[in-house]
Amino acid sequence: MMIRVLLLDDHAVVRTGYRRLVDGEPDMKVVAEAATAEEACAQLRAERVDVAVVDLSLRCGSGIEAIVRLQARQPSLRALVFSMHDEAEFAVQALKAGALGYLTKYAEPAEMLEGIRRVSRGERVLSDAMAQSIALQTLDGGSPMNRLTPREFEILRLTVQGEATSRIATQLHLSQKTIFNHMSAIRQKLEVSGDMALFQLAARHGLMALPQGAVGSP
Image 1: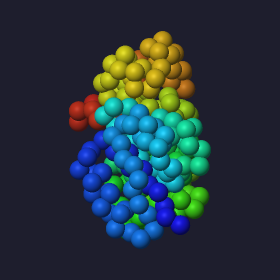
Image 2 (image 1 turned 90 degrees about the vertical axis):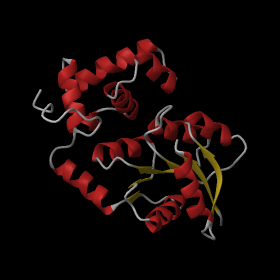
Image 3 (image 1 turned 90 degrees about the horizontal axis):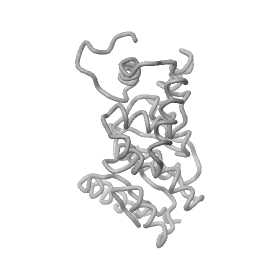
């Protein structure tokens, strides 16, 4: 059976490379590609997709939210995240959002292709390094970021990266009041009160970068 693939990445050059890789295989074909979640959802109106290969860091929107929206529109669709983020927190949130697999962009091309095949069969896929990272995190008691829902995680990530509340609301199709309410819940779950403590915690868990020497204990 031919595996029908959707590519969701906001870099056209990256999508072109993925397309050549996928279309070079006899058992899979790229039937749609998009730079935003909106474009990807629109593609599903005309195409049946088996596997969506999703980047988490989109300039317009959220890859995690995109997974939720794509699967709501086409429940049989399975998602494989292919991301630059190698922190366990990102993989945990993507899996909670509904992805079956998570590979970093350091993976070999053959690993990506095999990931698409395995995800299409309903199998869970994690790179060895990511699986070990998640396991070690669990043994250590888990990351505080795992207390957040996927939506809360994305709101926090976008906030600490400097996105305005109005823009976050637009990207996630929420009201600004809802964003403020989520941020209040996030602070409670992470047990931080001030913005500096929140930013330092986010930096320690890979959601942002702070100047060298700025990441201390809250």
